[in-house]
Length: 233
Image (cartoon, rainbow, N blue to C red; front, side, top):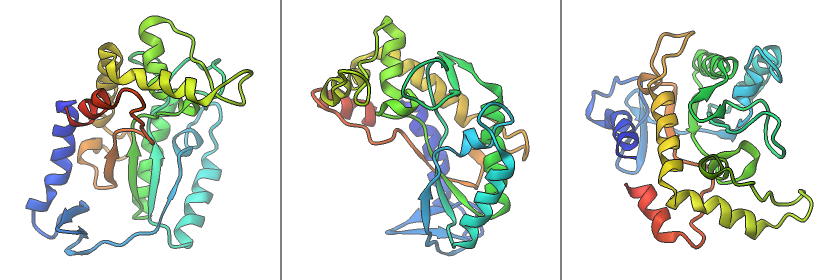
């Protein structure tokens, strides 16, 4: 986790650079871009990586059309998912997944993520990049935990006999599972240090990426202390 926050620090330390920096950075209570206050209109574009893929589920013509439509509406900031975990045959999640096994990646989706960011940069759109998920639709924390002990994930509704509380308690076990956290840290290092095949820019150096999100909607549940330790480590 320390490595992760170190990399985040590289990004947010841009406030020490000149006002001509191409990065968005925080100054006081404002975001700054090109020496001016940065104001944005954003939306969730979680499926962008998959839509940008050359493989299954991808449609680059549609992606370009949607980005143009969003830009024309004045939207200049997109929250995108850069993580999905688990076998492609798994239920209740987006497919194909980016990380189908620990440390094993779908190259077509990696290329899709590269393409998405490169197209956003062309339109001066900025990305909030999410790296994990508490919920089952992308695998996320529950999948990381399941990988370490071959547990079956107790999916919530609409799964047959599914219960939300049971699923949430299972997903929260991630915070006290050191091996699962190690898998996640390895993934974060891999993504943040990746070089975009279209722009030649490393993700950690890409001005198109405004910020990184540790996870989508994490909850501590009964693991509150472990949850806080995970966030603050």
